[in-house]
Image (tube, rainbow, N blue to C red; front, top):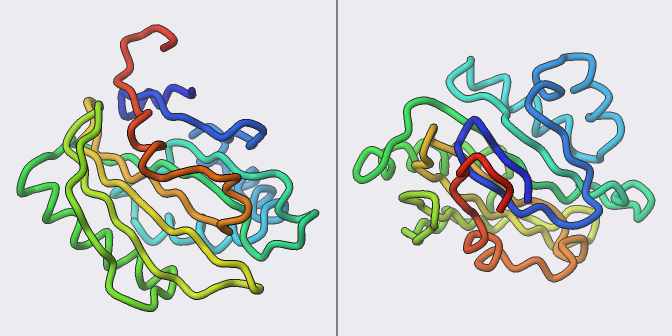
Length: 184
């Protein structure tokens, strides 16, 4: 589990994935290194620049083996944070913009499916997208927009299904925990 202080949560991270904190994601030189090292991450990091400061990258975890397996996209788990934390109808309103933007960025082949889901950290809407395979690999593209204790979070799980090592998105969401200042 990794603490995401910007959101006031603990996040489960797959074993062996490289963890990249918010400070590294804010550093242009470090972002360039990340883009070179992990396939597909440059495009995704560039999309965060289009947000014009409305949300900021809070965390990234990346499968370090993507390049050696020849995958066109490194499996990753990312967290974006924005203030304030919203719930109820405001969360649904925000999700509409986020889902449309993600679908465009990921070249979704169908409209995103949105559903309310319970989490231990706050109101949440899950977004499931169908995206075209990349390099012959089926791609998992799931996201949660959560009115967490300290911010509204966009948590995205993206990458080749085979690289997810059986990671179940429902089980992942069930493991999110509120931060209490101590390790869970």
